[in-house]
Length: 338
Image (cartoon, rainbow, N blue to C red):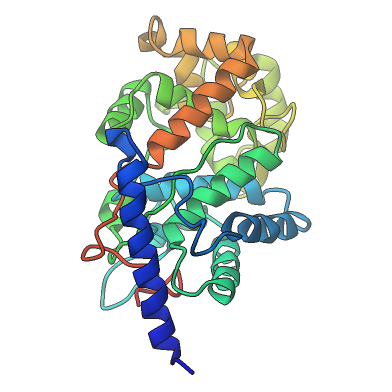
């Protein structure tokens, strides 16, 4: 009987051979090293296995789908889609998990770990943690009523985590120019990709601490954000009183908080965006002629939003991917390099 390490090497070799086949037929320069059927031979049930784990997790946590797509987003914007977010600290290297945008905020790493363990039991050494994040994001959106898309696969996991770069993720207090610049730095455009991917805030929860300045002291004025609807401000003031519990949770979309739909954009049109970075897409003076018309278009057509969102997710999933075995690996456990 072969040893577990030998089995792992064999599986990794098979995955590498399949990757070479994918390169030959994937077409398109942007996704030349990734393909939809990457695991068809080496782990044909990969998608179903991840889906089963997510369905089970959702039974006890209605927030889990929004949390998982956020993990994919925060991973891809730092060093590319390499599962660097999932690494724990080792050898003195600081982890992205402890960066301000992630600490006490990014959650449900355990669901990815559970999916990884299930995949290792079914096909050891084959499915990367970076690909699990990509698959989980698509399943999360689809099971919440949103669009599905063909997830391109074949990413390898990186060897490092980048604490410093994680500190510069797009944030809830960013103005439109900062958001645009950060998306361009990630090789995404600062208009359609920015608006479409921000639409992921159509589900999920957020802490009061991220809205209190808008309610009581916007930009140090001791007054509320003038772009915030008075009725929505009154509602939020009840939920997030001055000097209240900053960690209390609120729905990003108060209309359909757990459904993936276009209501995020209809909320922005009537100044009911929870985060400053959300409302900026419609209300910032720079938004006229750039992001505001896209907000309006998506508010009027869920089909348009869904199509753009799927396209932008595919683009995001291709940010600085690792496919060279000398620069990445398939981790046995997502929190540690092999």
